[in-house]
Image 1 (tube, rainbow, N blue to C red):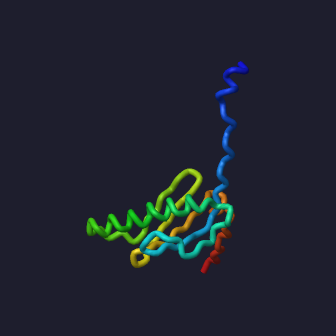
Image 2 (image 1 turned 120 degrees about the vertical axis):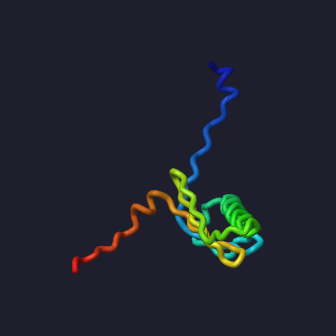
Image 3 (image 1 turned 120 degrees about the horizontal axis):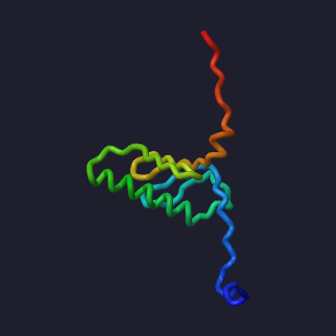
Length: 107
């Protein structure tokens, strides 16, 4: 058993995802963000690259695509096209549960 533990690696800690938003220019550079500094910058750039490429490909194919919504079990990504750039919102299930609901009064 000691021989097998020599090849095993300790598990990496899970990434804590946070809610927030960021904006991108045409080149995919991040202009502003509300994400915490602990959020990996490489992940922000990768999400941004995919979003800008998707909007660019839709425009090349002459498809009208103003908004892109992707749902994962632990993260939702909503992106809106802004003249070649994009505004990207990241939300987690925990953040959507904590948002206050507006009360409506009967007429």
